[in-house]
Image (cartoon, rainbow, N blue to C red; front, side):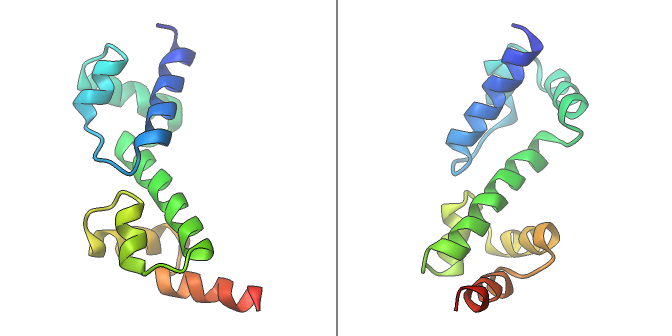
Length: 112
């Protein structure tokens, strides 16, 4: 498997399965690598860990939901593939610089 194909398999899988739990063993297996070599490979190509990449995909989805769907922040958290609300809040704040509710309110103000 060429490097390009390998990374595309990973990106496409994450894009369609980020709402579910994604196990490193599962991904490494898909691209015929061991977990340690997959982790090194992924970090070399993307400059971030696989877990960080998956969480960023989830956070991008969460920011979209917060601005487009009138659902609770707890629902946004679970809809985005997070299974721990306080971890979601902490990650979101680190990613955007704001809490999910401030983020949503900022967009409400812009849209009004």
